[in-house]
Length: 391
Image 1: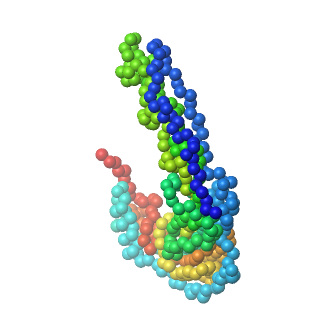
Image 2: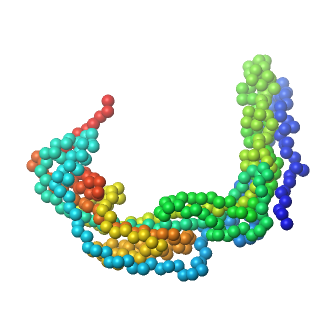
Image 3: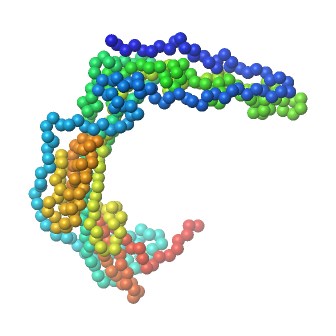
């Protein structure tokens, strides 16, 4: 049987309108204040008990926003398989010319740095502290449902016409792998019409500014009707009250939730969210350069693998990378498969060059670091700085 809209025509919708003006204040007496309007604005959502019977969604949307675990696959999910052994890689080193050019560019970018140490300093030693960065990305799809509503103005009502599709049966167009996105879909056969729960189906709500009276005490004469002695107040024409500017003297305002329509179209909204979860491990290079600096640069990509589920790195010159890969892969596959569907995983290994440069200037020894493919420089104790001031 088709669901019939709940009509509210028998309910009064004109409260506050019977008194759009104001009563004159008695001479010499302050005007009476209207009783305060109730603070309660009604519930913020339709009662959950009204929707518990929606087939396939019983209890899944109460409160809204909870992520729904994906259904168990009909066949066992493919398991990751070991990839080929990774070859050994040579560690590149930068030239003295590259180190000097990077240092000069660094000094010229600082308004308070003299370029003399970078240009005239003598490089006495260069030591490579190259390091590796392992990164695992897990691209997932998660789904959640919640009740939503909009003003009803004749939209189709299809609740209970037939069972709605399940949360994971709804088709959604996924973005390119590892690109985050979100899509909201109205679930078919869940739309019904309900009386607005904010205005209780009246279409209007009491004005809070005037407590539903339509007028307020005149702020100029404080309700007396007079300013000084026998001088009648010009602002309120001696009446002691003035029309409420918020509700234009009506004592009520149109309900913002239903736009005065008195009814709401209520339905289930499905939110499909694609998220790229990323974790990285950087090998400590013991050069003195802070690891935080390395997060701002890129390295030479030595290894990349992308498939439904990757297998931890099996062979690599640095054993800490192997251990990190095993830990992060196990963590991702265990954690994200519980609340979402894993669509793809990608693991990479980068070689980040770090060179510690020792140089001499004016008889003193100093150091700086050149790191990353961008040849960024870190020189905390630059020997020639000055104070700058803006006039």
